[in-house]
Length: 388
Image (cartoon, rainbow, N blue to C red):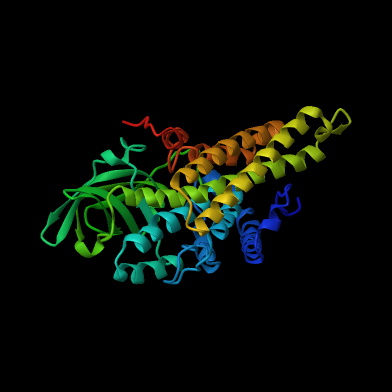
């Protein structure tokens, strides 16, 4: 099968700068050359391709939209295009980049001390240090304001107790950005691997995001120095700002998964002969392919507009909710429709579509469920909250 050439029915490439096209081409080649060959095996074994971390760092993808501290200083459209191409390979690669960049490097960049930034950000941009983001708890996913993890002062230190669940990169991370309730509100802490009382345990037997590391974190009287507290946090608003950054990348990433499913289904339909002609010649198959193309084209316009708004400093978090909600939902529909075109072959790892479909079920839920984003938009347009 020839290399992926992109999906651009509305000539959206004309809206991209030369630098943005070069970045996309670079990441596309990386995915084609180094991800596609082995990702099915990683998914089947339930392993993450850790050997690709340094390669991603070499391309400048880690913390790529941050300025200084060894980061690439790319614009938000370039960041989105990178997410698109990585998730075209597999959601695990985009998830790793999102967590490392938006959920770990960003809070250090936005809320950390200068000393924290100077130490951690260059190491993380180079892939020498890996991060994870500890917000979600077993009983508090969509409602982080009621988290149970607590930190109390003990002299100049903090004592951390509680647990976090469904944490990407958890047990391979060198540093965990952990959010906990204190007497002053909600604070962020940098908890280093090896801290006494801190343990990360991998979650096994997943049917989705199998090529991604997912863990549970526990804290039992873990002592955290004051120097490991993020000094400029603003309560719950701070982790929610991090989630907005990640959700933006997801809106592009889901589009990449959808593009791969569409591309594979289109190629297959042109080659698969039934009743003496390619199944692409049948009306019902053409309807499925057209519907996929229409939705991908709409996703492209939505994400590109959102990226331009972010670059202009005018993007609202509700607009990010709209893009995350829409693009993931439509990507799942596209994956299911593509699977149906391939028939029984569609469930084979060799064709990749079922892998995307299973991954997208998790993407539909994490970084804010589809339902939560619906209610965020509902509150924004009506002025009335459906939350408590």
